[in-house]
Amino acid sequence: MKKLFCVMGKSATGKDTIYREILRRMPDLGTVIPYTTRPMRDGETDGKEYYFICAAEMERLDAEGKIIESRVYQTVCGPWIYATVDDGQFDRIEGGCLVIGTLVSFEKLRQYFGEHMVIPVYVETEAGLRLSRALDRERQQSHPQYEEMCRRFLADEKDFCEENLKKCGIGRRYVNADLETCIREIMEDIRGNL
View 1 (cartoon, rainbow, N blue to C red):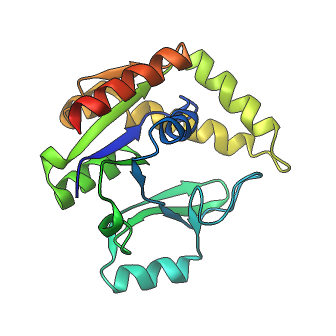
View 2: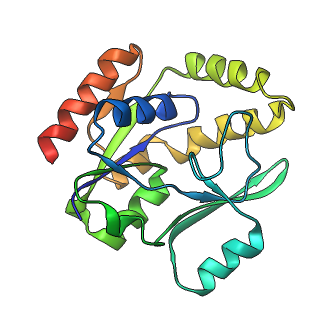
């Protein structure tokens, strides 16, 4: 396997948009689809953004030893599990690979694949802009979950605090104030690490 580039950052930093655009512009990059027990959002497709599975299926994957890393979030809608699964997807990647994750998933991926194989791509956006984006996104849902949006925003402030970023060795940061500049900088660094 080649290098694994882990895109991460607080909610509403533009990670998903950046991820999709980099894959569009760099079609040779592989991707791994994560698993989740959370409900699908409007516009999502099973097997595209995530594999949407039930808790029992997640437990089965865990019992089979296929879960590389998982996180449980106690949301206002109940517990949601997100996981990276060793289901053969990594075996099919010949070049670099782009994934979306958190600091916790980044650490576990590094433990699993090796520190030099997993490269952080940490995206930052000013807090007010993040909150505005999150609110705009939530308003577009058929059943907006404003309370969950607020919980996630506050949780990210703690999860991605400076102490945790330093502990994970996150040095380089990509500021998403201008999307095109941010994408270009990330792509340059990915090409330099392949």
